[in-house]
Amino acid sequence: QQQVKQSPQSLIVQKGGIPIINCAYENTAFDYFPWYQQFPGKGPALLIAIRPDVSEKKEGRFTISFNKSAKQFSLHIMDSQPGDSATYFCAASIDQAGTALIFGKGTTLSVSS
Amino acid sequence: DGGITQSPKYLFRKEGQNVTLSCEQNLNHDAMYWYRQDPGQGLRLIYYSQIVNDFQKGDIAEGYSVSREKKESFPLTVTSAQKNPTAFYLCASSSGIGLYGYTFGSGTRLTVV
Image 1 (spheres, chains in turn blue, red):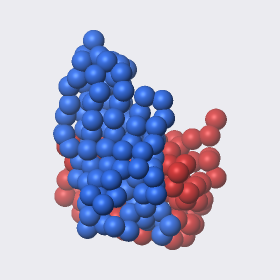
Image 2 (spheres, one colour):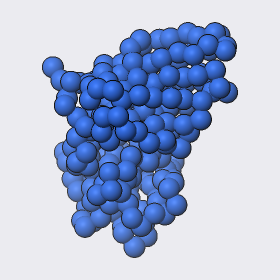
Image 3 (spheres, chains in turn cyan, orange):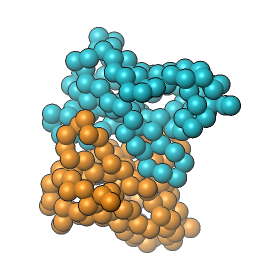
Image 4 (cartoon, one colour):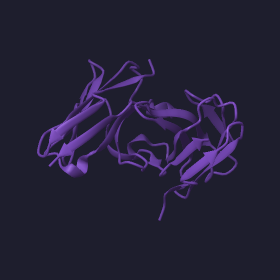
């Protein structure tokens, strides 16, 4: 019940494409769902986050879609650029209980020019 | 500038030796975390601490130990009991409020030789 399952493991798109990364969870107590972006040799950085009371959140070219009944959420990157090439992690936690984030296994995105 | 400092960036250890990884933050965050990152495995939680002098085991605590004597510091000791210690170790901190996310350090790459 503590797992967050992320797919695909890797993704290659052309510049301007819209990569989509999917995550699924089992624990219905999770109430905070962030996405992190990591470049090689660096620590992850918060990209965008959502709570289950909304179905979609946009920040710039990044959008989270959230389906509470299906226990799934996804990240869409509009007009992807070579600079978006990185590893993306979804995560979840029971924020009100102060539990630590549980991360998915990551998706390595490559955007070709 | 506020942030998290992990040191050293690269660390080599002989089998059978204990080694301590440093993590210091000046963000005045209450919570601190240690994650281990292996290729294709995502970030796995080792230990976390919500307040000084208190910490909880994560999913892979065996072979590791921590202390939290000061709010700013959360060192991780990798003991000789850890069967496969070669990995990238990431320290993070948070204010405890989910939407502000975690701030990660730049990591320490530990290699056992």
